[in-house]
Image (cartoon, rainbow, N blue to C red; front, side, top):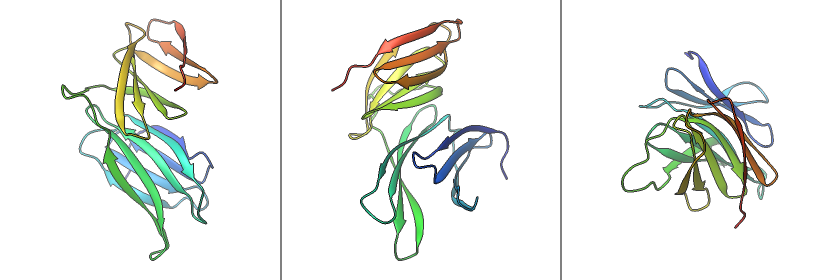
Length: 172
């Protein structure tokens, strides 16, 4: 049973919907019929879910979905198994600094191969999706980041201090 849904995210082709809830439930639904195709309870509350690439070189595309809790970032691959005729989720973790990276994430956006994740601490953490590794943390506001979005070559974030910041994204 689901409690309060905290985050929702549609796959780039609008075929799947991912949701995370207050009772640590992580679920992916088929938009076609509304049925869950993956349901899992996590040990720690997830605070982030965002879709990345869709690999369309097959009849049944594969998907990349990124989720996170306060101490781990996960890269999930949703792939179709022809033998059972259903999708399965394979999960691995991003490599984080040796000292750890404890963050409560408020939003996530993807620009090319970069995952940009805003935090309640006021920074944006940058991850490489293809190599599943943490790259950097950029402090932007003192009162936490409430929301953010990428538009072209710019990242816009709304801070808890009531200000909007515009950051130029460097490609490469």
